[in-house]
Image (cartoon, rainbow, N blue to C red; front, side, top):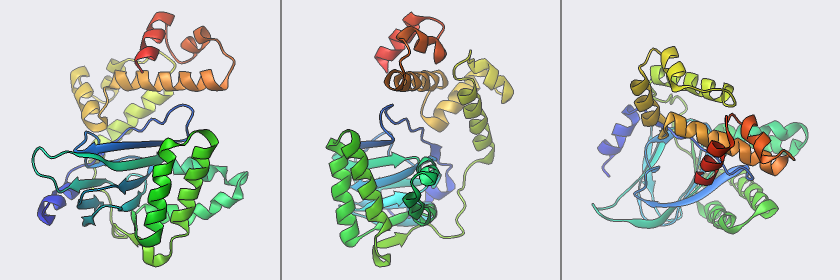
Length: 284
């Protein structure tokens, strides 16, 4: 893709990607083909470690535009807009091009009181806010660990994740390259950001209560259909669909971590009757 086309992404507000890890996992790992619905100009509050298995193209990260190829590894910080734009011809499909790992860095750093060694991550995470590309032996080792995580379970999965983070942390300066400029500020639509933040505040605060789309639409001075379209465009999720996903995610955590009965969990997470809960649980 020519630089002029890639540069257009800097001027377009990045879409917010909503990331929901599995209830028994502290980070999300997945692989995808290219083109792919989620492979777009987007941002999210989580950190992202990204591997390109094959193919080539341009990485746009904030105000940075650069080439990528097979074996490319990058660490993208919170809310840094990014996209890996593949050089593909119409109709071309690259199977399994990307491996993605997303995690909550703030939650990890919050463990420093009990696990003080995690304090070493502060510097890496601060650099990642501008994006980091890794090369050389560091990229090779990071790619190997990323691939291994995909087949791992339980504690082994967590150990491999920590080894991956340590590999990036210990990468020599010549193998860790900052991407966006130090003065970069995301070109996000401030009004849309304010609205979506209010919508999420309402959703998370009232998750176990009687949530109504009409209530948040009215708070944002929008019609119900207008808010519905807006929320879907920004997040990629329908408002009610996301509410259900979050409720079921919370239910899964309670099933794994508590002795509560299914019926008690149903009402605890905001459902009014067990039949709706069971139906949505099977779907999700």
